[in-house]
Image (cartoon, rainbow, N blue to C red; front, side, top):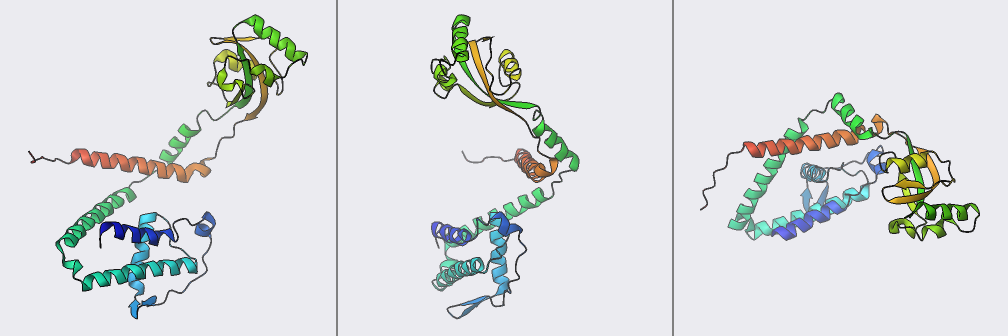
Length: 279
């Protein structure tokens, strides 16, 4: 069997349950009795031991738990049966004795062993509570205080800014209409909208002016910055909510494990002494 076809068959077998919902994964499964043999294929029994190995392979490849839905299990049995029968036909034709098959088998065994070795090393990596807490503190650092959603109009001179503020106060023009003439072309056509931001994301003079406003208020004096003069509208503000350690623990642990696995692999590569004899 060529590599492309083999890959396709394996892909088909994974497609049946590779996208289980969280509810399915976390639900307590209704017990499904898996008989031995599991099924017959053209009269040939499929042993439970062989099927269990196939399920374990899929779990390893996808990182997903085995399915608990009867129809999903039947779909996997069906795909396994197809692979089994194709393999039996190939054996009858002597394809398992060909030079190319034996070479591919050797490479696949090498790859599987290498992956097994790496997986064992990764599983041995210990992530301490202190490690998780330290990473958590890094992630949530700065997630505190108030966020602001504001819009602005940027002009060249203080006089221009004062004229616009006067028109806004007299309701001769809306903020969105005035914003169309803003030098900040990135926000001009969107009513001057700047989206949400927090301290450190804007120049200090601009941020301080925003923080002094109440929701719905417009600065009554032009705000000067290195870019020009701003008229600022504070649309709303909100307190940032810091996520709990419990809510991030699993994600942090996985991230640390993956990071250390990469470090381990790189260190292993560096320690390997390879002398190239190819000239």
